[in-house]
Image 1 (cartoon, one colour):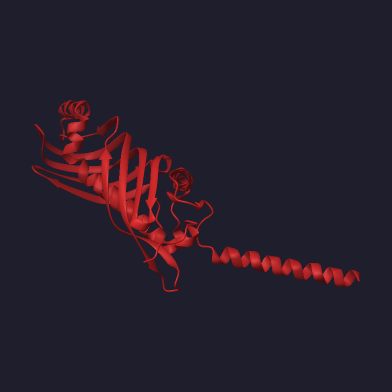
Image 2 (cartoon, one colour):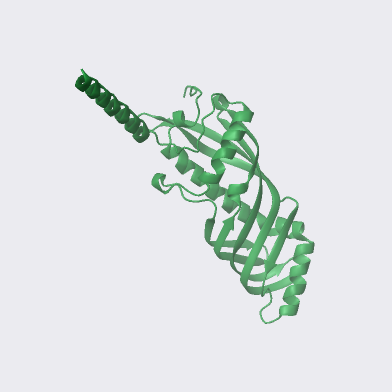
Length: 253
């Protein structure tokens, strides 16, 4: 009788372990993804806030690169009168963004996200031309610190099936608005080669007039950052099926 009892317990443990392993192997979404049972903003905001710190580190096993930091290998910016190139750059701060609002209108294929972020970009630059009143001929190190910027994304979504017949979110396109926030602080050396005094004078002007300066050349940088972010989200949605992201029936498509 005792031997029979042991065999039963052993078989139960084997079955339970097999079920556990099967469940773990079948699940693709990482543990920091907490699916909502509805599309109420309160749940979506919390779920997004829970995911950002870990998601921003990257998920190499799913082909999802890191966003904090994300690397700017080379970003040329051609503006009227001046060409600026950022290179060997690194942007940090995304993992600490505060989620202000999230809304999902599944039947309308609309997803909106609003966050407040402090972002720091460090790297090297070259600049030749004229910025506002000043002729620029510089090359050196730079740092841009963006304080309490607010980003609003309006994403047009889609649904599709993968090769195994599982449903997925997709991103068709997006629009955004970007408020540069409370302050942008520039730390840029050698704006004028071999003229430290003039470089410091112009840098002071840039910081005192940061909003005008940023509106002059900030758009390409923001475009680049959001293209990287949305492209990374696409890779995640391609890897993880819909039913592991949201416990709400998928709309007909």
